[in-house]
Image 1 (cartoon, rainbow, N blue to C red):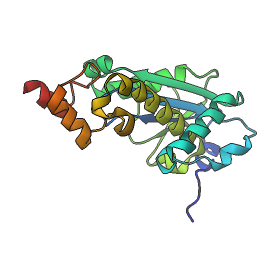
Image 2 (tube, one colour):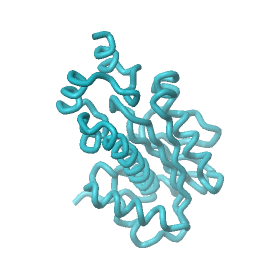
Image 3 (cartoon, rainbow, N blue to C red):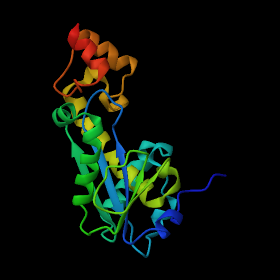
Image 4 (cartoon, rainbow, N blue to C red):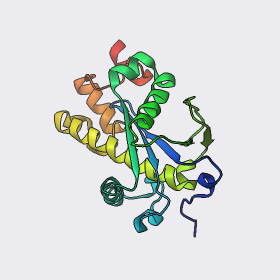
Length: 204
């Protein structure tokens, strides 16, 4: 049985440690979302069951999201970069901006950052990049849930406006249903026009 994310990486860094993760680098539509979480020194019981958001069902993610947001002992920040900004900045600059906004939204100053992935946003804090960090670090796994659920809810709202694209199911990724809708109805204002597959549709 594989272990759940824990605090071994947090222990080695300057406190308080903010764990960061993102949701939405790859989709063809919708905003990019990052989240930052600082866990308290005394952990609430439910946190011990937190896992990488990709390993949880949507129902479990939603349940954890509500528990996390309701527990005021946790500091949570969310950073969002909309489609227009993303197309202007491109992902290389948009992702650091999303992380920056997430950290700025925290209600306390972090001593260091523990970030999932390999793309260092170069924020003004001691930073540790951790590949597959959402599977290893408890604070990153918690942030992954916040980022994923926040973005899913944004895509659900867009799905209500543009149901043909299936964004409530595919979260803006290039599924067959999404491609078929692009063939039939074209590009919406919520598509990332800087992304190659969408450029192809724009060029006809």
